[in-house]
Image (cartoon, rainbow, N blue to C red):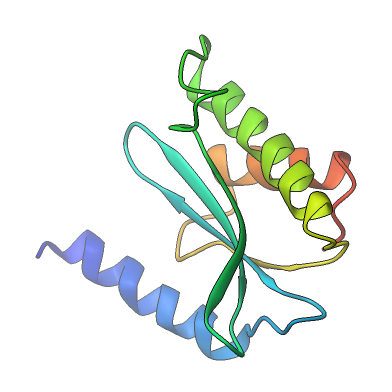
Length: 117
């Protein structure tokens, strides 16, 4: 494993030691790969995913645009999925990634769509 991945894992474990999702306020976890972006709303007390969205979803699979546009669409989608599951507020888990670029675009889009964090 290269040092870049090890550094992200170290930062991620530091973040996860401070952030915990409950049934009232679940955790919004973001994972960013080179081509895709994924978001999950997780209740850590039972270890269950309550809502999920990704750029691989059927409605976003044929999406044309930049990766930031793609992340914005995933942010809107996760907010809609969370609202349909009855979730209004979450804690944001950036997963060891910098709050910049695609991660920031996803977060801001979810906020604009009505998710509170």
